[in-house]
Image (tube, rainbow, N blue to C red; front, side, top):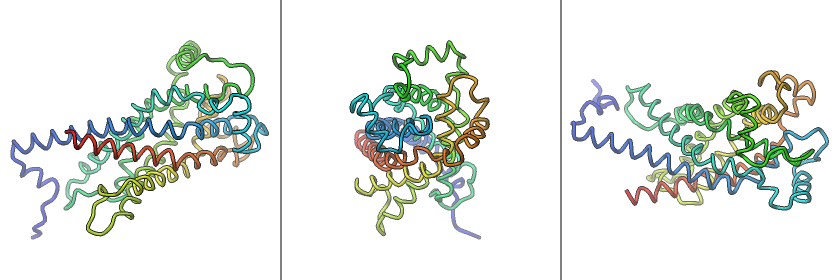
Length: 315
Protein backbone atom coordinates (compact mmCIF):
# COMPACT_ATOMS: atom_id res chain seq x y z
CA UNK A 1 0.00 0.00 0.00
CA UNK A 2 1.34 3.42 -0.93
CA UNK A 3 2.55 5.60 1.92
CA UNK A 4 2.01 8.82 -0.06
CA UNK A 5 -0.50 11.22 1.44
CA UNK A 6 -2.68 13.01 -1.09
CA UNK A 7 -3.59 16.67 -0.93
CA UNK A 8 -7.13 15.73 0.08
CA UNK A 9 -5.90 13.37 2.81
CA UNK A 10 -3.59 16.01 4.20
CA UNK A 11 -6.52 18.40 4.35
CA UNK A 12 -8.50 15.90 6.46
CA UNK A 13 -5.61 15.62 8.93
CA UNK A 14 -5.60 19.36 9.68
CA UNK A 15 -6.76 20.18 13.17
CA UNK A 16 -9.49 22.84 13.68
CA UNK A 17 -6.95 25.46 14.78
CA UNK A 18 -4.78 24.70 11.75
CA UNK A 19 -7.81 24.83 9.45
CA UNK A 20 -8.57 28.36 10.59
CA UNK A 21 -4.98 29.37 9.90
CA UNK A 22 -5.01 27.75 6.44
CA UNK A 23 -8.24 29.55 5.56
CA UNK A 24 -6.76 32.82 6.76
CA UNK A 25 -3.65 32.28 4.64
CA UNK A 26 -5.77 31.51 1.56
CA UNK A 27 -7.81 34.66 2.08
CA UNK A 28 -4.68 36.74 2.53
CA UNK A 29 -3.19 35.19 -0.58
CA UNK A 30 -6.29 36.13 -2.59
CA UNK A 31 -6.24 39.69 -1.28
CA UNK A 32 -2.55 40.05 -2.08
CA UNK A 33 -3.05 38.63 -5.57
CA UNK A 34 -5.85 41.13 -6.14
CA UNK A 35 -3.85 44.15 -4.96
CA UNK A 36 -0.60 43.11 -6.66
CA UNK A 37 -2.45 42.46 -9.91
CA UNK A 38 -3.85 45.97 -9.84
CA UNK A 39 -0.40 47.47 -9.37
CA UNK A 40 0.94 45.35 -12.21
CA UNK A 41 -1.86 46.59 -14.43
CA UNK A 42 -0.98 50.23 -13.86
CA UNK A 43 2.63 49.62 -14.91
CA UNK A 44 1.35 47.78 -17.99
CA UNK A 45 -0.72 50.75 -19.17
CA UNK A 46 2.02 53.30 -18.60
CA UNK A 47 4.48 51.30 -20.68
CA UNK A 48 2.17 49.87 -23.32
CA UNK A 49 -0.39 52.58 -24.16
CA UNK A 50 1.37 54.09 -27.22
CA UNK A 51 1.80 50.65 -28.81
CA UNK A 52 -1.82 49.79 -28.09
CA UNK A 53 -3.11 52.98 -29.68
CA UNK A 54 -1.10 52.35 -32.85
CA UNK A 55 -2.39 48.77 -32.96
CA UNK A 56 -6.01 49.90 -32.77
CA UNK A 57 -5.48 52.59 -35.41
CA UNK A 58 -3.99 50.04 -37.82
CA UNK A 59 -6.81 47.58 -37.15
CA UNK A 60 -9.65 50.03 -37.70
CA UNK A 61 -8.34 52.48 -40.32
CA UNK A 62 -9.53 52.25 -43.94
CA UNK A 63 -7.27 50.29 -46.26
CA UNK A 64 -4.29 52.42 -47.28
CA UNK A 65 -4.59 54.97 -44.48
CA UNK A 66 -1.23 53.86 -43.11
CA UNK A 67 1.62 52.03 -44.79
CA UNK A 68 2.62 50.42 -41.51
CA UNK A 69 3.42 50.91 -37.85
CA UNK A 70 6.09 53.57 -38.41
CA UNK A 71 3.87 55.57 -40.76
CA UNK A 72 0.97 55.42 -38.29
CA UNK A 73 3.24 56.66 -35.52
CA UNK A 74 4.50 59.54 -37.67
CA UNK A 75 0.98 60.61 -38.65
CA UNK A 76 -0.30 60.50 -35.08
CA UNK A 77 2.62 62.57 -33.77
CA UNK A 78 2.37 65.03 -36.67
CA UNK A 79 -1.31 65.63 -35.99
CA UNK A 80 -1.57 65.38 -32.20
CA UNK A 81 2.01 65.48 -30.93
CA UNK A 82 3.51 62.90 -28.61
CA UNK A 83 0.53 63.42 -26.34
CA UNK A 84 -1.58 61.84 -29.07
CA UNK A 85 0.12 58.50 -28.42
CA UNK A 86 -1.60 58.45 -25.04
CA UNK A 87 -5.07 59.26 -26.36
CA UNK A 88 -7.67 57.06 -24.72
CA UNK A 89 -5.42 56.17 -21.78
CA UNK A 90 -8.00 57.29 -19.21
CA UNK A 91 -10.34 54.27 -19.51
CA UNK A 92 -7.63 51.59 -19.34
CA UNK A 93 -5.78 53.40 -16.56
CA UNK A 94 -8.99 53.72 -14.55
CA UNK A 95 -10.15 50.25 -15.46
CA UNK A 96 -6.85 48.41 -15.58
CA UNK A 97 -6.46 48.27 -11.81
CA UNK A 98 -9.64 46.23 -11.29
CA UNK A 99 -9.07 44.34 -14.57
CA UNK A 100 -5.61 43.09 -13.71
CA UNK A 101 -6.55 42.76 -10.06
CA UNK A 102 -9.42 40.46 -11.02
CA UNK A 103 -7.25 38.69 -13.60
CA UNK A 104 -4.55 37.72 -11.10
CA UNK A 105 -7.14 36.99 -8.40
CA UNK A 106 -9.06 34.79 -10.87
CA UNK A 107 -5.85 33.04 -11.86
CA UNK A 108 -5.20 32.29 -8.21
CA UNK A 109 -8.80 31.06 -7.92
CA UNK A 110 -8.38 29.00 -11.08
CA UNK A 111 -5.43 27.19 -9.55
CA UNK A 112 -7.55 26.34 -6.51
CA UNK A 113 -10.32 25.06 -8.78
CA UNK A 114 -7.86 22.84 -10.64
CA UNK A 115 -6.61 21.45 -7.33
CA UNK A 116 -10.17 20.91 -6.14
CA UNK A 117 -11.09 19.10 -9.36
CA UNK A 118 -8.22 16.65 -8.92
CA UNK A 119 -7.85 15.98 -5.18
CA UNK A 120 -6.22 12.55 -5.50
CA UNK A 121 -2.76 13.85 -6.20
CA UNK A 122 0.47 13.42 -4.30
CA UNK A 123 1.71 16.98 -4.87
CA UNK A 124 0.03 20.38 -4.76
CA UNK A 125 2.34 21.58 -7.54
CA UNK A 126 0.45 22.19 -10.77
CA UNK A 127 1.73 21.18 -14.18
CA UNK A 128 2.09 23.77 -16.93
CA UNK A 129 -1.04 22.39 -18.60
CA UNK A 130 -3.00 22.79 -15.37
CA UNK A 131 -1.67 26.32 -14.96
CA UNK A 132 -2.84 27.10 -18.49
CA UNK A 133 -6.30 25.83 -17.57
CA UNK A 134 -6.25 28.12 -14.53
CA UNK A 135 -5.21 30.97 -16.81
CA UNK A 136 -8.11 30.26 -19.15
CA UNK A 137 -10.50 30.29 -16.19
CA UNK A 138 -9.24 33.73 -15.21
CA UNK A 139 -10.56 35.21 -18.46
CA UNK A 140 -14.19 34.66 -17.45
CA UNK A 141 -14.51 37.17 -14.59
CA UNK A 142 -12.00 39.54 -16.19
CA UNK A 143 -14.03 39.88 -19.40
CA UNK A 144 -16.98 41.35 -17.51
CA UNK A 145 -14.90 44.47 -16.85
CA UNK A 146 -12.47 44.25 -19.75
CA UNK A 147 -15.11 44.39 -22.49
CA UNK A 148 -16.78 47.74 -21.65
CA UNK A 149 -13.44 49.34 -20.78
CA UNK A 150 -12.02 48.29 -24.15
CA UNK A 151 -15.16 49.50 -25.91
CA UNK A 152 -14.67 52.98 -24.47
CA UNK A 153 -10.92 52.90 -25.03
CA UNK A 154 -10.98 51.99 -28.72
CA UNK A 155 -13.66 54.57 -29.50
CA UNK A 156 -11.47 57.27 -27.98
CA UNK A 157 -8.36 55.90 -29.68
CA UNK A 158 -9.80 56.15 -33.20
CA UNK A 159 -10.95 59.74 -32.72
CA UNK A 160 -9.10 62.06 -35.05
CA UNK A 161 -8.51 59.25 -37.51
CA UNK A 162 -11.10 60.73 -39.82
CA UNK A 163 -13.60 63.46 -39.14
CA UNK A 164 -14.29 65.42 -35.98
CA UNK A 165 -14.10 64.16 -32.43
CA UNK A 166 -17.43 62.71 -31.37
CA UNK A 167 -16.69 62.19 -27.69
CA UNK A 168 -15.47 64.61 -25.03
CA UNK A 169 -14.05 61.88 -22.82
CA UNK A 170 -14.68 58.45 -21.26
CA UNK A 171 -17.80 59.49 -19.35
CA UNK A 172 -19.28 61.04 -22.46
CA UNK A 173 -18.59 57.82 -24.38
CA UNK A 174 -20.46 55.77 -21.78
CA UNK A 175 -23.33 58.26 -21.76
CA UNK A 176 -23.71 58.24 -25.53
CA UNK A 177 -23.38 54.46 -25.79
CA UNK A 178 -26.04 53.93 -23.15
CA UNK A 179 -28.33 56.39 -24.92
CA UNK A 180 -27.65 54.59 -28.18
CA UNK A 181 -28.43 51.06 -27.03
CA UNK A 182 -28.25 50.63 -23.28
CA UNK A 183 -25.94 48.11 -21.64
CA UNK A 184 -25.99 46.01 -24.78
CA UNK A 185 -24.21 48.79 -26.64
CA UNK A 186 -21.67 49.27 -23.86
CA UNK A 187 -20.96 45.53 -23.85
CA UNK A 188 -20.72 45.17 -27.62
CA UNK A 189 -17.86 42.81 -28.44
CA UNK A 190 -17.96 40.88 -25.17
CA UNK A 191 -17.96 37.55 -27.01
CA UNK A 192 -14.97 38.53 -29.13
CA UNK A 193 -13.19 39.75 -26.00
CA UNK A 194 -13.70 36.37 -24.33
CA UNK A 195 -12.60 34.56 -27.51
CA UNK A 196 -9.39 36.58 -27.38
CA UNK A 197 -8.72 36.42 -23.65
CA UNK A 198 -9.67 32.79 -22.96
CA UNK A 199 -6.91 31.16 -25.04
CA UNK A 200 -4.76 34.26 -24.61
CA UNK A 201 -4.79 34.08 -20.82
CA UNK A 202 -4.02 30.37 -20.93
CA UNK A 203 -0.95 31.10 -23.05
CA UNK A 204 -0.11 34.16 -20.95
CA UNK A 205 0.09 32.53 -17.55
CA UNK A 206 1.36 29.23 -18.95
CA UNK A 207 4.29 30.92 -20.71
CA UNK A 208 5.12 32.95 -17.61
CA UNK A 209 5.21 29.93 -15.33
CA UNK A 210 7.12 27.82 -17.86
CA UNK A 211 9.75 30.50 -18.43
CA UNK A 212 10.20 30.97 -14.70
CA UNK A 213 10.73 27.25 -14.23
CA UNK A 214 13.25 27.11 -17.07
CA UNK A 215 15.18 30.03 -15.56
CA UNK A 216 15.16 28.64 -12.02
CA UNK A 217 18.54 27.19 -10.99
CA UNK A 218 18.76 23.74 -9.46
CA UNK A 219 17.85 23.56 -5.77
CA UNK A 220 16.02 26.90 -6.02
CA UNK A 221 12.40 27.96 -6.42
CA UNK A 222 10.82 30.22 -9.07
CA UNK A 223 9.96 32.71 -6.32
CA UNK A 224 13.67 33.34 -5.78
CA UNK A 225 14.30 34.64 -9.32
CA UNK A 226 15.91 38.05 -9.68
CA UNK A 227 14.07 41.03 -11.28
CA UNK A 228 15.79 40.53 -14.64
CA UNK A 229 14.47 36.97 -14.87
CA UNK A 230 10.98 38.12 -13.86
CA UNK A 231 11.09 40.81 -16.55
CA UNK A 232 12.08 38.26 -19.18
CA UNK A 233 9.42 35.77 -18.09
CA UNK A 234 6.77 38.50 -18.11
CA UNK A 235 7.84 39.66 -21.54
CA UNK A 236 7.64 36.13 -22.92
CA UNK A 237 4.16 35.78 -21.42
CA UNK A 238 3.02 38.84 -23.34
CA UNK A 239 4.54 37.61 -26.59
CA UNK A 240 2.91 34.19 -26.15
CA UNK A 241 -0.50 35.73 -25.60
CA UNK A 242 -0.43 38.18 -28.48
CA UNK A 243 1.00 35.63 -30.88
CA UNK A 244 -2.40 33.92 -30.82
CA UNK A 245 -4.71 36.76 -29.77
CA UNK A 246 -4.46 39.11 -32.75
CA UNK A 247 -7.22 37.63 -35.00
CA UNK A 248 -9.97 37.80 -32.34
CA UNK A 249 -8.59 41.18 -31.25
CA UNK A 250 -9.03 42.54 -34.78
CA UNK A 251 -12.63 41.34 -34.80
CA UNK A 252 -13.20 42.85 -31.36
CA UNK A 253 -11.77 46.23 -32.39
CA UNK A 254 -13.80 46.38 -35.59
CA UNK A 255 -16.97 45.25 -33.87
CA UNK A 256 -16.57 47.78 -31.07
CA UNK A 257 -15.78 50.76 -33.30
CA UNK A 258 -18.18 50.18 -36.21
CA UNK A 259 -21.40 52.21 -36.47
CA UNK A 260 -24.51 50.43 -35.16
CA UNK A 261 -25.88 47.90 -37.62
CA UNK A 262 -22.60 47.33 -39.47
CA UNK A 263 -22.21 43.82 -38.07
CA UNK A 264 -24.77 41.44 -36.61
CA UNK A 265 -22.25 39.75 -34.35
CA UNK A 266 -18.62 38.65 -34.14
CA UNK A 267 -19.08 35.89 -36.74
CA UNK A 268 -20.64 38.35 -39.17
CA UNK A 269 -17.75 40.73 -38.56
CA UNK A 270 -15.28 37.91 -39.24
CA UNK A 271 -17.03 36.94 -42.47
CA UNK A 272 -17.23 40.50 -43.78
CA UNK A 273 -13.66 41.30 -42.78
CA UNK A 274 -12.29 38.32 -44.71
CA UNK A 275 -14.58 38.99 -47.69
CA UNK A 276 -13.53 42.63 -47.88
CA UNK A 277 -9.86 42.59 -46.91
CA UNK A 278 -8.80 38.94 -46.99
CA UNK A 279 -7.38 36.83 -44.19
CA UNK A 280 -4.37 39.14 -43.89
CA UNK A 281 -6.70 41.67 -42.27
CA UNK A 282 -6.97 39.36 -39.26
CA UNK A 283 -3.34 40.09 -38.48
CA UNK A 284 -3.47 43.87 -38.74
CA UNK A 285 -1.70 45.49 -35.84
CA UNK A 286 0.41 42.45 -35.00
CA UNK A 287 3.59 44.53 -35.24
CA UNK A 288 2.77 47.07 -32.51
CA UNK A 289 1.00 44.37 -30.50
CA UNK A 290 4.16 42.26 -30.31
CA UNK A 291 6.37 45.32 -29.81
CA UNK A 292 4.13 46.27 -26.90
CA UNK A 293 3.77 42.74 -25.57
CA UNK A 294 7.28 42.30 -24.22
CA UNK A 295 7.93 45.59 -22.38
CA UNK A 296 4.36 46.10 -21.17
CA UNK A 297 3.97 42.63 -19.73
CA UNK A 298 7.52 42.54 -18.41
CA UNK A 299 6.53 45.65 -16.43
CA UNK A 300 3.25 44.01 -15.41
CA UNK A 301 4.82 40.95 -13.83
CA UNK A 302 7.67 42.88 -12.28
CA UNK A 303 5.13 45.22 -10.71
CA UNK A 304 3.06 42.25 -9.58
CA UNK A 305 5.95 40.29 -8.07
CA UNK A 306 7.57 43.35 -6.46
CA UNK A 307 4.36 44.55 -4.82
CA UNK A 308 3.58 41.00 -3.69
CA UNK A 309 6.97 40.72 -1.98
CA UNK A 310 6.45 44.08 -0.28
CA UNK A 311 3.06 42.98 1.01
CA UNK A 312 4.53 39.70 2.23
CA UNK A 313 7.04 41.69 4.25
CA UNK A 314 4.36 43.96 5.68
CA UNK A 315 1.83 41.27 6.60
